[in-house]
Length: 116
Ligand code: 5GP
Ligand code: ZN
Image: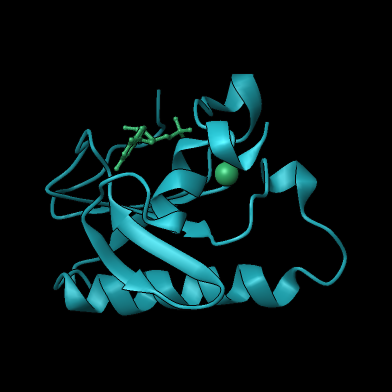
């Protein structure tokens, strides 16, 4: 998929609206348009990466940084003490619908297990 047709690339580029909470050279974080929990934030690489399956050797730093941003936003959203959930849906069976890698950061309520 080209970056022109990828909604998350459009948000990264500032060409589509989003409630952006964090932006740096590696990642952008914004609120999910369909809130599945009181706090529901997506953390995406600035570069188009289709899914976890498309990470390359050398992307460890990117992945680590995505989780560091998740931790920072969790504290900012006051979820640091009670906890939260980070999810990466991968491929059709994993429930991925937008094929630009993203962490879902979910919290503000008690999560259920196992997920559906
Ligand atoms: P997935 O199902 O791929 O794991 O998650 C994709 C997420 O992206 C969904 O939770 C969906 O609500 C969200 N989403 C899809 N389109 C947009 C959009 O245009 N803006 C925002 N902020 N979120 C979106
Ligand atoms: Zn993209």
